[in-house]
Length: 435
Image (tube, rainbow, N blue to C red):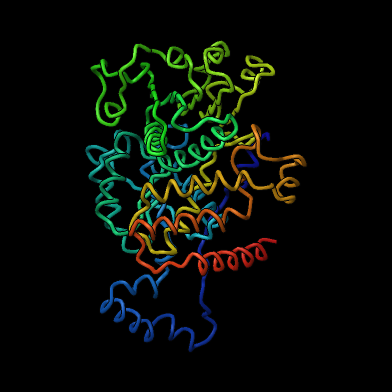
């Protein structure tokens, strides 16, 4: 759909989020409960039993959306203030889809030398986030440039006893894996058989590679702006070196020879139609660069004609949008509800499995009507669920919470039957409110 600049700016006037009061403050008795003298009892209870902070404050359902503004969308380093509309947007999505309260935390002076622009200083970001963590049940890192984002997430995740999740890394990886699982289903190949080429070796590309390998993909070639990450390259460091492979392929085009799946998290128009002819039969093309994909759906259709293929992008105006909103609200919902210490790989895999399974279910009539596609059904044009599918709220958090419990990171007792009913009841109440 076309976006009008003035309409967008009018929509953002005054910001997109605010404070919702959850308890009544209408009488003198209410005031005494909310503040002095009553509040002192809650203070004393938390001081005596620190875990009670999750019961007597909003912490159990509150997530900090943290950024330093170094990698805003596809726009780059524009600073903390410019990142706020994106962080507010993230907070809206948290609440609308996962019923998770979230608040933007843009960080100034977290660059090398304490400046407001330039490269991220991981130590400063870590210090700031650790300092504000007592108010939050989880930390969602956002729009922080690589490679600093890896150190920041890994260090905070080890340091804090609440979930720390960099959505630009893992959100994209979770949804991509869901799409890959269903691509494999459609082309009747096992994950271990797939030859995968990923173009883009930043935070998203590297985490996608890690998730695919953990899921069983044995052949994954990662490329950056200089070509294939080969063992012979002397310029590779850190995470890139970990994913270097022994191959004669040097370019993305070379790597696509015989590949089943192309995954792009890079730049527009870097793949040509003729490159697709080098791929194996029934190829998957996940061209997720925004706003313009690595190769357009029209170019793919022209190149492959009537041959079977699967096409996905990062855009909502094409089929199969790899959209992070399918992930982070529901991952945090499940993690918060069992008071998980972290969001581990098993929980991420559980989310991807649940997403893939839901896409194979019959599509609700309300979703077909909303998207104007009366024949919408699992297949090459419908690989992953639509964000407005209400069943996401009931299926993904349940899978995530179960994985948290099974891997020992949940601090709350977990009953799958009881939690499934709780999610069902909450979902019904939420849907009534939204009507």
